[in-house]
Image (cartoon, rainbow, N blue to C red):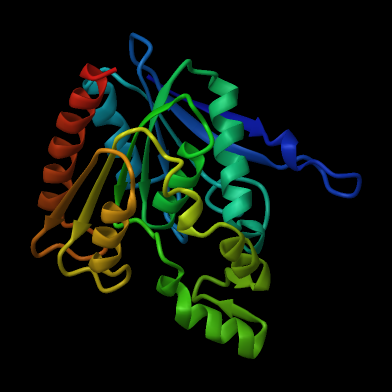
Length: 246
């Protein structure tokens, strides 16, 4: 059963701004295992995340997918959805459901969100990522446009401005290295033209915890249907290992 929730992110309340609300969907399973999904920069909780959550329930996980502010059904403007805002949204969603422990899955920019969240929350017992953003060079082209024009406007009308890069620069991957202690899995397409595969191998070498990294030959930034099914098989096999070592 899937249940929709509107969750206020009270940490971001100010005297001049109302409390933003994000929309989350909880796919309920028996037991106390939880898996939270973090979508990418220009993505949302729909599509592949619904499929992933349904599969998670089959594997015995309470699964939660949600839209960060400015995305999908949640409040706010896309330009407000910086790394720091997305971290606040994730923390607010997790605290709303209040699990004793949980795992994270983050895709692309959601992978960066998952890494930084896990580094500051002892409840996180495992982090899995697909094509995670670790180095900021992924966004160099956007940064150049923002420096020149003040903003990047996408074909959807959504935009990012200097706030995006200010938040990004405040949270380099260095703050994850040496702090993150739970096991990590990194899955990356061998033909990814958006997030360099080499960045994931660099991140895996630097992390001071157990790391599984797998290159999916022939897959790009978006996986094919067959690639997605392979990913899920590997993900839940690895999570079973992570559960067993607790």
